Image 1: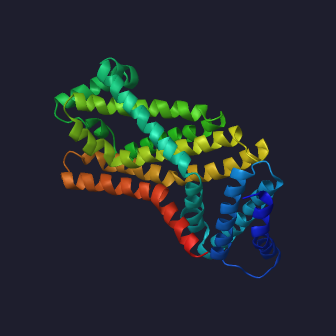
Image 2: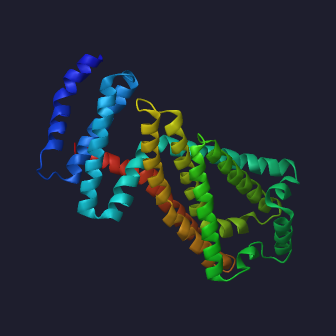
Image 3: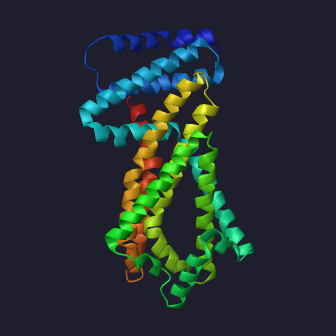
Length: 322
């Protein structure tokens, strides 16, 4: 379709949306959402076929204005936190779903590299994890409690220290994205390779099942949160590398706003994972296996649903209302 035909086909709709922005009659968040979806589809088409056209800039600006209306009205109707967690973040997650899938796949690739490296070179685990940790873990395994490291301090002390450390890792994953995404990539590689070598170490020592039941009680939510934080860092870097029809500064502002919201949304998951690690993981060996796997499965399902499935459902629901 040529640009002139595209404009002719949709001009009336765009003018109607502009008119809605000028009148003072109250319009519901759902109606603004419907308009935003329509504009997003038109914008995606324009960016694909007319990337350097003034039309694309016009639709960019109009979609941004309508999105602000959606969020403002939804926040007013549902409350600030509801709007943030049940509308704004899922909308961002859906828009940047390819970046999140990319971050997940890349993370798993380097987890595999870490495991293979540990299998090929027995010194690799000590290089990555350090002699002190490896020696302590070997001693714990010889005593029949591979996860004893999680019992070394008080419940609240462990939960607090672990949560602060995990939040620090998350902040670095995100903030280092400003270096064109390379800083985020570096932090991701460090953590993914460490996880792979760490998990292979337990497999090699014959306590793989025990490590799964212990580590992944908190790890399923903790690791997935890191993946989302990595995605947020990549979004920040991409806003500088690929400004599209925006100026680089405009792109950075939009990229920062969206990526920061995605990053902030991971904090409740990170804190909850820290509480599990501090208060529950230490009892992994004494817990029934079914309870272990129930906690692992439910926490993994929760965070996966929120970032990868719920946004799709919200998008489909909005389309049905068009």
